Amino acid sequence: MSVPPFQDFMFPLLDLLKDGQTYRSSDVNQRMADLFELDQEDRQELLNSGRQTRLENRVQWAATYLRKAGLIQNVQRGYYRITDLGVEVVYSGIDFINIQFLERFPSFVEFRQKTKAEETRDNVLVSTATPEEILEESYKSLRGELVIEILQKVKEATPAFFEQLVLDVLVSMGYGGSRPEAGKRIGQSGDGGIDGLINEDRLGLDTIYVQAKRWSNTVTDSTVREFIGSLDTNGAHKGVLITTSDFTAPAIRTVERLTQKKVILLNGEALAQYMIEFNVGVSEKSTYIVKKLDHDYFNG
Image 1 (spheres, rainbow, N blue to C red):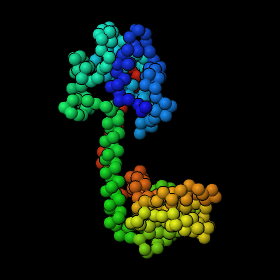
Image 2 (cartoon, one colour):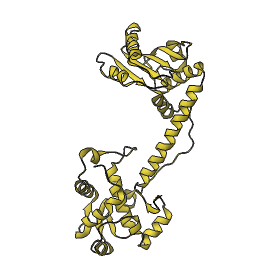
Image 3 (cartoon, one colour):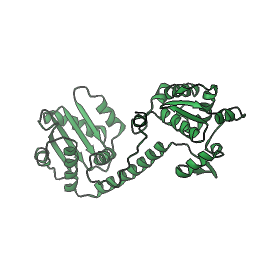
Image 4 (cartoon, one colour):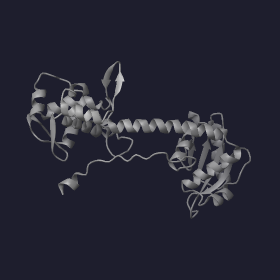
């Protein structure tokens, strides 16, 4: 099964701590993973930030909410222990704890008034995502909308502009040295796309054959095979085929079977994603830096 919502960890976590012992957070994570019978893939699944597993994040927030309600405490960094109030709750006959349950505790109500991150479903107040996951989903949604806008603009642009755009993306990614140098080597086809060789690095230690077209139809395997044949003609072993549309499954499999050559297929969405990543045709609107408490500072 996948990692449960963070509220599902609240009661099992409190129940684990009912013996009054101090538990290390890593041990708690392991016990929760075993309890919910998570496989190795689920245990190792990372948040989009890549800095924390989803399991660790959700158990951590379950612990945070229990602590804000006064049911558990942090005896030191990364160590949990149940409180007297927590003991009363866990032995009160309940078998599930969620945000609604915790709202009976004044300290938790005060905390929630300052940090509202919830949604209404069937007139019941619920929250299935941690604050980090909510931020990530919002970011993914905004980025997805931006990708759609970029692709629309690219398809509306003139052939000459598209040629410049592809050059800008490649140079921003570190290929071709400078834009004038890349432009000289690749050249312009005049048919709404570009074809040619580009340096793989600034020293020109290797070359890559590039073909970019504003195709409206899905690129088939026959087109990909023609592109692969062009590598030999142009004395290249590596190639990048770019399209504003997409590739058929057979076209993708054709590339996957290659052993002597390396070919990368970039569809319209991938091109837009690289434009965002390397700041081509986009500008920064806002920056949000999420900080956390530096326990070492206070313990020093």
